[in-house]
Every structure is written in C-alpha cells, then in structure tokens.
Image (tube, rainbow, N blue to C red; front, top):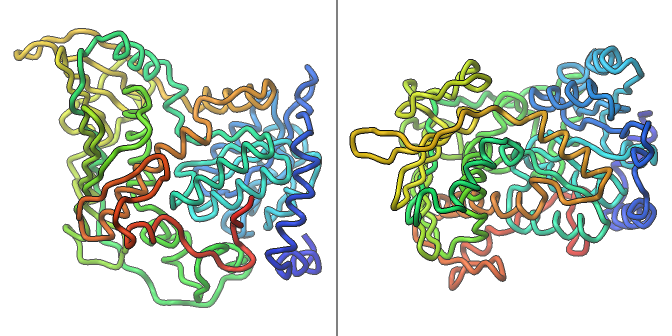
Length: 454
C-alpha cells in the first residue's frame, strides 16, 4: 500500500468508515462466492501472521479449493517478511504482502478472510469483513467483551456472511461421538462437569517503552485499544498479559475446553450465575490477567467449573504422539482435560485429540472409550464447504459467542474481586450489578470504532 493510501485510510472519520462499509456490504451481501463454480477456488486473505495465522495460511494455501491473494500483518519485518513468497510457492500462484487489512476489504475479488490477529482486533476486523461482503474464519476468542460479540452476530446476519470461530474441536469426530453418547444417556444425568487448563509457566516482566521498530505500524496494531508508546511487552512479547488486548489464558486456551464442555452437554447457552476467584497467586509480576483462576458456572441442574494455572510444571498438554495416534493421555497430569460426572459414569476427555474414556466402576473399570484426532484440517474444510453451500458452520458466530461469554463472565468476576454475579441470558446483562454491567462493553479509539448499528 502506498503512503498516500495509508494516510487516506487512517484519516477517515468513524462516520466515513461506516458509510464505506455499509455501501460495500450492500454489494457484498448479495455476492455469491466464486467457488460456486465447480472448478474455481475460494479467494482468501490471511490477516495476522503470528504462529497460528501462519499455520492457517499454509494449510489454506495447500488446499485445491482455496488460494491466498494476500498475507497481511502490521509488522513488515518479523511477520510479513518473505512469508508471501512461501505461500506463493505452496499454491503456485502469487500472494501479495499487505500491512493494512482495509485494502483487502476493498478488493472485490476476495471471497473470505482468515483473521488470526491479536484478540482485541477480532471483532472489528470481522465486522469490517462482513460489511465488505467477505466470509470470515476468525480465531478464538471471537471477542474480548460480550457487547462486541453480539455486534459480530448482528453483522454476520445483516450481511448474510458465513463466520466460523476457530474452536476446531466441534469438527472432531471423537468430540461429536462423545456428544452423541451423552445425548443417548450413556452417562445418565449430569449434575457436574469440570474443565481444566492447568499449565506451566513463569513470571512476566514487562520491558520499558522503547523506540518503535522500522516496518511496524504500531498505531494500526493498537487499533481499538488505548494509545500508548511502543513496548515489546504490549506487542509480540506479551500482549496476552493485558486486558486491553486479550482475555488472558481463559480466553486463549481455556475457551477450547469450555467450548467442548458446552457442546457435549448439549450447548447450554448461558449460566444463571457465575462466581470467580483468582489473581496473582503464584507470581507478583507485571501481568494484569490472573495466573490462577477458578470459576463456577451455575445452570439449572448443572454446575460447571473451570480451573486454571500458569505455573504448574508437572502438568502437560497432550503430546503429539497421543494427539495423532491411538493412545489416551495420562489423565491426572493432562493439563487441558474435561471431566463429566454422570450418575452412570465419569468421562475423561482430551482437547488436543486424546479421545475419551468412561469410568464406570470404583476399581477403575472402563466402559465406552474412543481414540481421538485433532480436527484443524476438518474445521477449515467445514468453513470452505459452508462458504459454498451457505449453510451454518460447525462453530458459527452465535455458538462462538455463547462459549466466549463464559470467558467474559469469568474474567469480569475476577476483575471485580470474586463476588457472585447473577446473569440474565436474554438481555445478556447482570442483575442488580451496574459495576459488572459496565464491563460488558469496552471503549474504542477513533477511527477503530464498532458502531451501535453495524
């Protein structure tokens, strides 16, 4: 993008942006993807080129039914670099480097985008994409507050867009089998389920502010977040430690296990109350988000709990040989497991593949069990299939919002000191607690504003 065009983008008022997006959407919402034609590939763009974004980009580029026209990141050196050339080599066609995602949204040839930016950009980028007539694969968490998640749903519905959230376990055969097993009564009644996200880690020390590196558009990186001087700790080296850009590890990793629990338990939408405690228990460091967190979600006839650590070296994520093999994890030290306590049996379940096993006897006797595989490729395939068919994907934005809401509620609880919060799922507001309701929405920095009417 030329400097003149970049200044033109950044100088737009919020009103101008909305007007442009609305006009684009009126055309885009009626647009059918080129892939409706049997031999055409879906034209895509990858926005955000960290580890997860690069993996998505490579995998989409290697498919026969998609092609990446753009690879986009605000960091031209560390993130963009030679990556577009790598993509071009994989797909045998050019891939352009872009630093400002709005150039992508103005390109009518682009059918869909994959958004893997820092979390604070997920909602606005998705809404802009929907307004411009693009379908969206957006990483989790889809939003970092309940209000903007609801706006994502409104944008997807208003402009007729497919929005898939990157909670890929919903496309995993073993997770689908577990849901069916429970639905058919395999565990009996279920009064209790437990979700774990117990991981290793160390203290976080934020560096001092420093000079902005060449090739980095830090203002564009901050986007909706408050303006501040450049700091590596608020950039690649630690953004997940601050509320301005993330929902902590509850939103980064825990959302996967919570989403699995919701799915296999029948997608209960909203708890009626939440109680969360935690904070800087293991480390008195520079992070804002907790290093230890315990949440209790209360539904009618079900208690769902979540436990998180960022300091336990003996807890391990499911290793590769288990993720992609006919093996089960060692459940006591499986850091990302789900336990479902039924009146007929106890189900242990893994997140990264790992399958599930049902304990039915006090002596450790096993009942039903199923090996598992990860479903990254299946989830991406489901998204592309839905871009063509216009059917709702496995992890559509309403499902993603409901799972992310558990993250938001837990974090609002811990930020308010752990008091019990009563929640109304119809209005998506807390009952009798305006201090909590004030955290349902965040402020936005012009021109990176999500409007009331998307």
